[in-house]
Length: 357
Image 1: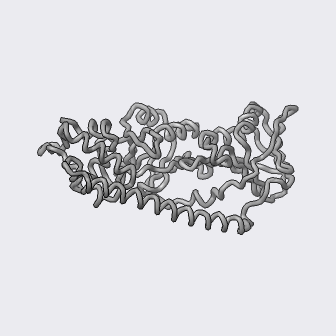
Image 2: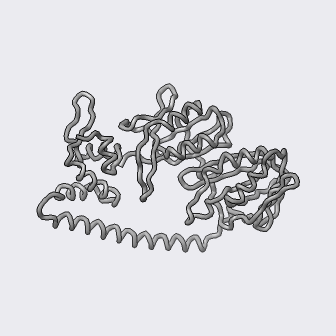
Image 3: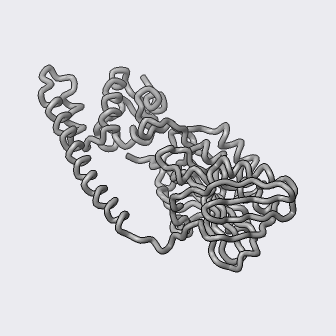
């Protein structure tokens, strides 16, 4: 007999998915302990679960999944083959329709002017606190993207307006924003997206200068720190309007002791997750009624649990560089916000992973 955790590891289905398929009557445990409620699966159910995992990854509707599993061991496999072929046709038709819609969207983008995004080619020179800029880059660098298909995300976006300079990085699954004071540019808005190699070169110069000069001119960005400088081309693509992505509804708040919470996440239970062939480990968090937050055991279930990539969470905790942090939870599908107490301008957002099917 296999426990639900063992079944999850060996079948490729998550614990929450197994619970879902039990409730749906599709893969019912062979035995449920009447006292503890623990689910136990018979050895022969492992093969069935592995078939179910493949059907799930292929996105087959539940009604068809039921029939496939019901006919999987039958001598006549004609029904199963027809169901598989019908679902494949639906996927192909859906892909064809999606191509049509995406082609139309690309045409709209080609025809549309975007007045909200200004080119980084206008000349500007900014006076920035050296330690402030260093702290801002340290707070966001971890969230920058590495996907070669999305090169504009493989950098740090600098957005100066008024007396504030925001540094922003995102790889779609997480976002980090930090702010520092700026002056000397006349108050107009200045934006430039700096590629990561240049970001790292800039950070290497910020090792003690109280004030540095940041210049943006004709698609180039230059940092001067004392008698040293580094510079290079900005990215030509427009960075997404990050301000639209940080408007989150109010939710539950929990303040954590960072060293203790980091250790609890690092050594605590994880759930395996696979998305598009990419495997990761999730930490599932729960906020108690008294405002404490902690990872929950592997088999825990509930409507208010929030699952996030464990490595991303550890990166965000380390980048915040503070002994106390505030975690803000919304719905299970709302990004988890990680902030410093009393600082609403420097924060990280982590996209949650849905635990239910």
